[in-house]
Figure 1 (tube, each protein chain N blue to C red):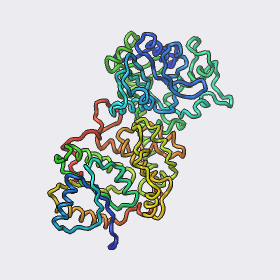
Figure 2 (cartoon, rainbow over the protein chains, first blue to last red; figure 1 turned 45 degrees about the horizontal axis):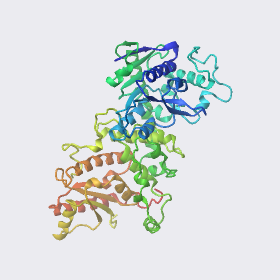
Figure 3 (cartoon, chains in turn cyan, green; figure 1 turned 45 degrees about the vertical axis):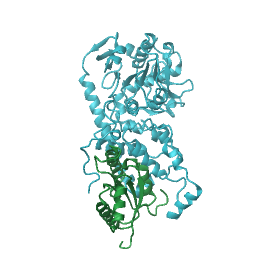
Figure 4 (tube, each protein chain N blue to C red; figure 1 turned 90 degrees about the horizontal axis):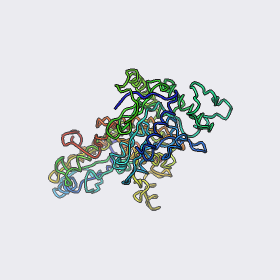
Length: 401
Length: 140
């Protein structure tokens, strides 16, 4: 099934809340993983099972603390019985989940993949202050700024109602997100604004979200969720297709500029060492990476444990060695291990304490690497991971003179 | 750079290239002593980390020798090594490092002559390139 769903009371976020609450009430889903702002004001996610608590969720909240796939890797690795859990995922999160499924790190059996459009997100740190600036320039809680407020659908909690306005305005003013310099770097360079793999997709890009939302099911699992909804069935409206094309073109152009800048300062031995010079070897980039899935990283293993004598021996080779050692080795090896599955979510850069520009770098390296195998991470559940397979009749020049 | 003696780290598959090197030796074939051989069970067991560690610690070249496609003792290890080499080369190009310092070659147990020739050829090629940029870089 695919078509347009009417937005209730010009409030897209409330419409989604109502939709999700319905799925929980009907028992179609046992729980849903969905963005939410905690009582303490942290932009995070919640696994919601009680439909009465749906007001506390923020399905359209444009803030990203971690890639949801990291959470799903933690909670959906073991077989489960008797539960069905919906996952509301942005495109980069969905792509990471797809990679994790192929890497056999996530079991899909009990999950329903609900993909949603994403015009771009803000960093979660400081997001609360965007919603409610402390200098008093806060959106008028009674009137909202560019959106309308409707009695009855709003939560009485002032924080969640101003958040709701913020979320709705973010999708209403979607044109402004084309070039919003405050978005996370990765989002400014991201060409994948709609989900490619899903059971159910929800869209608002290229539409007037105050009037209508795009819904689509890709299979029976998804169709079961949409059953009973009043959907004006039809193909994706032309204006939406066109909008998504324009957005992708704009973002691709942003990425090209960013990679051009990167090439000037990163290429070659000297520049590369300088690019990573500030690395503390904290391994945050690895720990937050949704597709860096090993339970124990090779770099944290005993293979990298060396005796003092060995360190001295290595030091003698060049006369001195930098400590902590092998930071560049870590990054280059991580590229070799993960570039096939990198989805470009940029969470690595967000978590880097010394602000190394990992987003454009990984964008470039992963795109080049995936192109070698005509692969796009997260594009399909059926495409084989390039490094787990081979063809006899390929790359004939490798290994020959 | 006439007096530059390259240091090449070689990872040789136990079943083919290592035996090929052995044959070159027992046949008294002459070839440059610049390659330090390390015996591995399969070309596919050479993770990129070992290649990169050798390069960053200042090796001037890294050689990986495996069985000819179709001849892998483990059926498909060398095919997988070949794909990983495609990825490795791509990453080296993306970050502007010299992929030609890393050679992957298929040399069977019967090809002692090919082994000796390949090491000679690689030593000459690396000599022409000069020492690795990482040789004196202590802050990597």
